[in-house]
Image 1 (tube, helix red, strand yellow):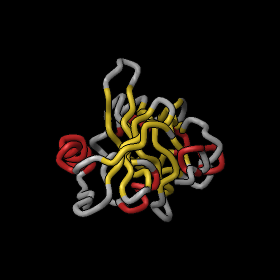
Image 2 (spheres, rainbow, N blue to C red):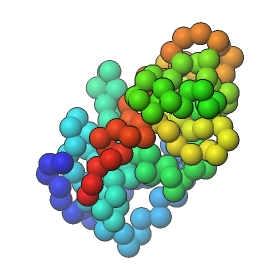
Image 3 (cartoon, rainbow, N blue to C red):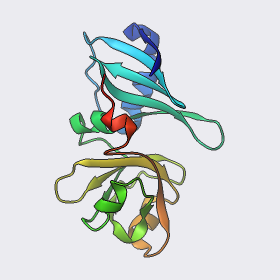
Length: 163
């Protein structure tokens, strides 16, 4: 992790507001110790020394802010979710892209190119985040093809990062 520095809430308020609006959540960071840091290609937002959000670029160089999996542990009611069956979990834990055959449900607001988070259908626990390659209806109804290009998963370097 490089360039780790404390930041004021008002300095990153627009970034956090966009994230809250996109996921229909309240981050509740008032009074928290906020930091920003560079980690590989990502800019991270640390809340009380835990990486809660990352800023990533899509293929068109458009920047997006999204929660990390640790962030989704606290906000399991967030929008932009995709649910998978237990057969998909071992593959996702190794960083594989999510195939539509394992998808059983999806937030209706998902469109092509959206950042989404993947959760297991039984416990609703976050497993991975990635870029949707199709809309919510197709993710659920199709039986073949790649549904989500995985970006961050449980067990990767960002998940295992010691702060």
